[in-house]
Image 1 (cartoon, rainbow, N blue to C red):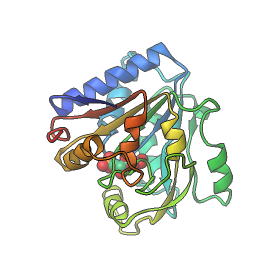
Image 2: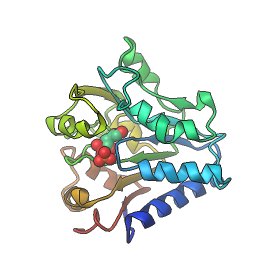
Image 3: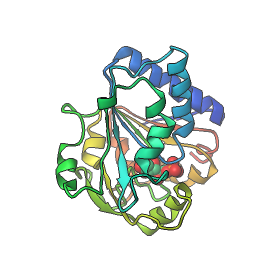
Length: 236
Ligand code: F6R
């Protein structure tokens, strides 16, 4: 895993967006797995500006949403699909049928999970980090080869999800792309910003590689970058 520390949050946004534009130029048909949460939103906004100014195009690319909360109404703005649509998908030149989301409200969730993702695996996986080291909704203890599936959320993840909603009916479960397909991605970028992520960034880099700390498993990946701003990378 390469640890890349940018001097400021602004430099981090520009740097990651520049890498992303390069990947799209090299492979216009890039297949991507994308998270929501708060961390990647400024990068998505930078990519929207890049598309508008003609410096990037998603017209041949495809996107899969990394995860989705259960028992949240389809029109709730805090739903992860709605967040990703608002900040990226609806503002770029992606083909309407090139965007895929898990829908935990449908009765065929197991089937959806089995079929989710591109045939050859993801070219590029972007991830945020939970304070407990979760990736997507793969909580501590998830197996390194876990498939895309329904999961129960840990209490700290439920509490952290309060930031995404304007009400207190918080999700207790969800569906997530598993660690298996994440770790099989050709390239993985783990994103972290802000002082509140400094401890977990340090643990990911220093602690023993362990399923109790899912993000540490990325250290075995041949092409993974941990991309942090100065605050998140303050305690390497
Ligand atoms: C979101 C997701 C989560 C977040 C993580 C960090 O799709 O899968 O794993 O990436 O909880 O969230 P933020 O970025 O809000 O700190």
